[in-house]
Amino acid sequence: MSDTENFQQLSIWLTTFNCAKLFPFDKPADTTIRQRQVIEKLLPVEIHHDIYVLSFQELVSIPQALYPGVVSCYLDILAPLVLEHLNNGYHKLTHNESKHFINSKNENQEWSEDTEPLLSHMSGFSVNDNVAGQESHVNGCYKHVGSNSIGATGVIVFAKTDISVLNYATTNVRCGNLYSVLKGATVIQLVIDRNSQRQKLTFISAHLAASEGNRNLKRRINDFTTVMDHVRYSFSKIFDGLVFFCGDLNFRVQPPQPIGLDYTDANVIRTLLDENDELNMIRSQHIALQEFEEPIIEFSPTYKYFTEIDDSLYNFRRQPSWCDRILYSKSAHNLFIKTQNYNAIVRTPALYFSDHQPVVLGVTVNMTSKHFEPFDRQMPRRFEHILGTAVDMLLFIFTWIHCSYGIPGDLVAGVTFLTILYVLLD
Image 1 (cartoon, rainbow, N blue to C red):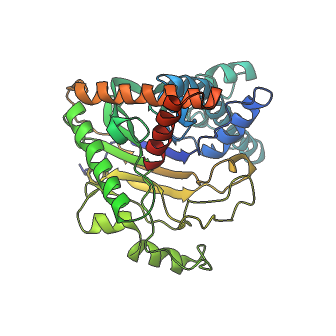
Image 2 (tube, rainbow, N blue to C red):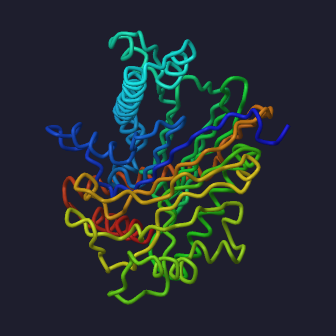
């Protein structure tokens, strides 16, 4: 028997999006409509995948990010809307498949006893079911597996209902100054089962140090090392399964390029990625991220755009760069991973609020008969957690005072100035 024989394929879709602190949560009159419009762009449903993952950075403002539980609440608001979108998309797709088969039956009059089970398997419902029955089934096609967040960074995982989650664990990593949550990563790890075949998946949604220059490149490398050290400490084994590392990794093109450069030109894209992209440079030199691989990039830089205006205008206050990336562990080769899609989502008015372009990755990977050991979950490092939480609360209090009441006195003025300076330096 070959290595791939009799193993099911698992289809996974990941989307990462830096929302520039402006995701539409705060306009009650049209909030739900705008949220649905964003979700529809982030998760196309022309094909229904087995696993969907949404990775967010800068989902909320800095004061909201500093207050514990805010982003978690917002993810809980988004989850039902995502489920509605996925299940409605599944219903429309399977309904069209059914109509196609039924039309084929009527035109060709070729219908055997084997055809109906085939159609039922593809569409998720019997061809004799009524519409209400179809909707009842489809409404339960996908489920919300779980969410996790730290600061303004979040991750949500959805899966088809025929996938069982055997083990589930989360962890968070603080990379901001003095262990604040303004930079870092949020992680979900799970072992899934479908028809007695299993797979272990780890999703890391990260927001690494920003800004250009060698000093900030070193900070990004240190942030990545901190994230991976923490994840290994938290979960012991991670590379016995498939690991995705995604988010606003903030790696830049350096040195700065001429403003008139055509970033849609395929040759320009290839040259910049081969010769000037920091992430590819440090991977080729085995400085960091050597455990991961990335599909070939054929899309234009994803940052920095002007907001609320034309979709194609870069803001040249920053060098256009591929800040938003999705990588997977090299262990995926043993699972016969195949990249189906790696691209940036076209910016439309629904996404103009951000200066980043969302990036998507679609892959298929084999399930396995391997037995994965139960997670050896470790507690977070106590000192880092206590110090980081204290810093977050101080930042939140003084930022809130400054935003709400202005500057009532020299003490608050001084602390507020230091707070703002701290945030800017981060």
